[in-house]
Image (cartoon, rainbow, N blue to C red; front, side):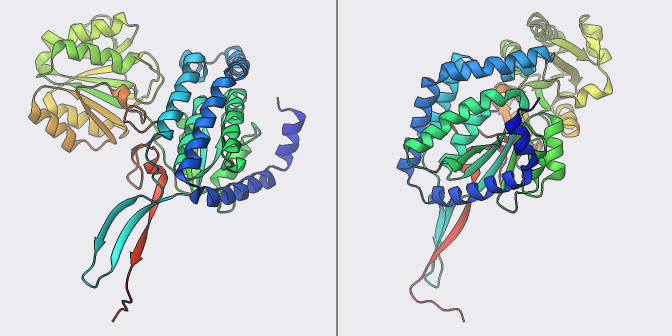
Length: 429
């Protein structure tokens, strides 16, 4: 139920959101000219505020967790929502890592000279104002705020009602960091209401003040954003991640990576949802891999062929190959080598992340060349599909589109570029 103050804001929601957009646009102009030192100081002050106020953040998170449990929310959802001291420390570590990255704004991407004497530079610039719409992960508040600031962008955050208290408690700490560095508080704003109409206003672009929308959440949210947004979107709809075990794979490696790729955290978009195995090693590799998954608590849905070999598996339906479980469930199929794996992945993949376990270099080369997902891994878990693991300090999300940003969206992906052309009196004939 909305509070009285929230109800008042909902009554004036279009006006309130428009004002937030204008304030963000003004703040973005200031951030674009802010020095690397001031942005670094703000990020470090945010870290200090987060850790100093960790008790208040955990208290706010307890309110959200209680409400979620009373609503009968799933275990994977609760895992995404829950905060503890270790996760707050993780947020702090992530912001520190972002702070220590080179400042992208103003960096020269490329430069060259023309025969007429013109010197041309392609230079990174901020995107402007970024709208981030997310659901249950309150840590997105810190990640998105820090990444956008580092790249010189203002950001408007709209968290889900499930993480409302947690996100707002984190946002208070981000504001303290901005104030400490004498940067405008409007550089990182959070929508102060749970009214879903706020999402609609952001998707309209707030009168042209939002330059990019980034959704972080389930298929319903992302699908709505992609369908309704009037501004560019960085997003992935689903994480239908595949793991292929080739006949040249080391057995121990195949077992350990399979369990980690599926079971480390089942509710993240980099969790493997389909396991493909070369039919040539079904006698040697299939049972050890599936037994390890079963022992770890994973339900196995498989083809008739696999079920005949592993009695604990249940027969997969056609929909299983297109389902992002986000749960301890995996679909399993035997294929005819790398050709079969590539064919299956190209048919069912959401272009997010795929991994191959193989010692045959020619197999790996074909996997990398003939599959066009945003992230491809060799002999490593799909759970590495994460900006922090890529050395980006963090990510604002994973993008599976092919325009501008693809894969983990980190600091550099939150910039555009402009050309600086220097001459000495040239005129065009």
